[in-house]
Image (cartoon, rainbow, N blue to C red; front, side):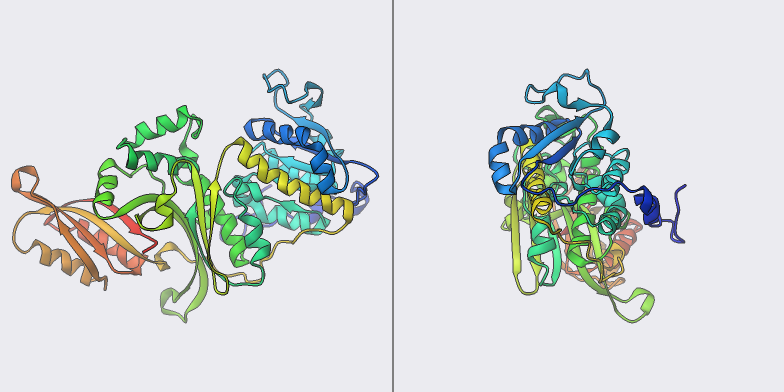
Length: 470
């Protein structure tokens, strides 16, 4: 039965339930040693799983040299043995008994996706003493703490470089290379599908649905693109990055999420005219806020939403299905990670990097870093983030309108940076205003938009986009 805390979120699963009582846990020698192979099991044989098998098979000699012992692929778990497969996958390796496969592996690679049965299988692998490598951002974003706690208690590795930004080495630098620094902000494009869609809307003038269909035809988007275009995929990745960067447990439920389905061709054109590009950004940042008038409290805000990025900013030049992430740290300054964020081969590359690392630990002894959550910072709502808005309004074309609009901003202490008026529309009775604000709390900016929508002189709020990177 699901145990829940007072706030409604799942409570931690007792480790005795995960690992089983001590007298029932399978005895596994944690060190394989150079005299025998490290047994690797792969869960899932889709696009990524197939490429993992290909790399394990074709690069076996190089991988053995890097690990210090051979890597033996002992099986590949699939749902249906009759499904046609790439010739690189030996049919004799296929099995539908994932539990039995997990029980005879030293390293379990999970590329099946979804929450269950992936979660149960990984917990079984950990309980049996196997190291785990996963590309499952949805599982880590939703229930990573349970896996982290189980791996720490069992003394095994849990690696997940492929769960965020595909082949881009991002997780390890944040978790290990910057362990001696203080990260203040992570900002970037972490979903290749939405970046391709927005890029096509910008460069080819396509409508959103046309760009999504093109992405599906090229294999960038699934038949059901909801996870991408509604921001769910990016939100899971943002939660993982925030947890690592700020040493605080952040779940996908803590992430403010907005997708790109409301972005129109008119928004794209307005952005171009004002020197911006629209990108779906994942942003995790340290903030100091005063909740309900109390003393300032350090915390984090994690958000995913479309944003306007200046066309001079490096993120504006990230085209197609590529990803790019900025990490800002107090000592290291600003670091940028760029590359292919999706696809079978790039993701498999990240998976194999983790496999080599954890297999080397099995041979030589030792273990990678455990979950770091010492900071335990509160996760603030998006209203406490500081940002800028660009608002497009349709208003009555008559004297006094600008004064009423300005009063709405002043009522919430939001300062206007620029106003741009378009030629009259609707036969001259209305006109469009584009208003760009100075930086303010998101809550104040949101309240301003709500006030504007209620003005008699405002026919409609056409669009609201945050401005980042400027």
